[in-house]
Length: 481
RNA sequence: GGCGGCGUACCCAAGUGGCUAAGGGAGCAGUCUGCAAAACUGCGAUGCAGCGGUUCAAAUCCGCUCGCCGCCUCCA
Image (cartoon, rainbow, N blue to C red; front, top):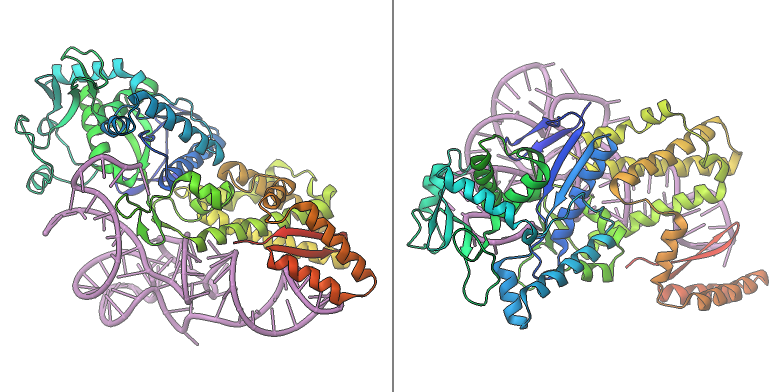
């Protein structure tokens, strides 16, 4: 088996083969930094983070670029509203985005260029488009002439005539065709601007990605990702710009698009007022739970952010880490036993097959929990009858498999101690107070005063603390929800 | 109106031609426990929206119907 990826352009799964040997070039549309990032941005970032990690895991040398759109109407509007310079807005939200990414454990791409740092390349591409007759200048604006590009609509499955008929955009009468889009916008007084051959102005939205991908990754790139909503017009326009400018097809060999995040069954939108920022989500749930939730369905499907689904993710993490803790506490030497490479490869094959099938992280999660069950069963038996060959053999393999996948998914990758420490940090009652009550309960139990002991346990449970009596003493954890 | 997608148990979700339809959450019962918790075991879809068709064989392919959603405008 080898990696197969669903390509939005051809609408089918295709075997993945990089253009150049072992090197993979990948570009993902980053955020427009005019406000805090929301859970939808988180999904896109996490999904492509896993793609990036998996490609590296497979041994590819991956060059991954994710941009910041730091100049745009929305940023200017926000700056005017707040009464601050435009770049204060973009810098503020780039910082916020970086914090969010760090919190979610998203690896830093090879390059994170800002649009405003790539103006020169944009001017170059625009000039080429003008020279080749794909763009025209109008009073300091430059427009792309959509009809000149044969194949416009191939990604989104649209045809020009229908677009024309259904055009809902207010038509700028000066444009040669209502479908034409801006490559360069002349600036009004007081607006941020850069010098250009056509006068002071700023770039249109679509041109930046064509310019940045070309600058950092070359004229043809292997993978281009983004949310499904970017297919039209953004990615369609990128194709038109890039392929027209370079004369090379395809601009992108594999187009990947992730599905949306709904909130309690509703689309996230400003008008509904249900935008969930990453920071707000992190107030209620751990980053690992959020990440696991995001990877629990296939990346192309829509998913629903709800209290129930996030609690479910937390319950899964609890189950996973309790198993890990049990393994490492009970049989540390066995768990750390060596696994020979050939056996390991064999053993993790189901995981690899799932990832190879268009990054099926949900199936990977399913397989992990099959192994969690197996590990617990083995440990139950070992506890009863002692360890046998099967136990010696399987436990290290299971643990190794978890570690391999944890590195790719970016979840299940902590130690049990770290995990439970964080869970305990969310305790509604101070830890020392809990410890004190546990000691009191132990004393009562020693005196066979179970009534008193149970009362303490019940009181703690009412406050969200669960007790577990183990052979090695009583441990506590924070209840989910 | 055009384009695309989805509908699998109480909830989430994998499976897209062929073993008893993964896994998680919730629930019930049992083992363990002073009692619990955790863990384990068992129960839970005779069926994959409905109806037809193709096939030796379909949740999986084809057609129709119903329901839901996304894009077509800035949007991850």
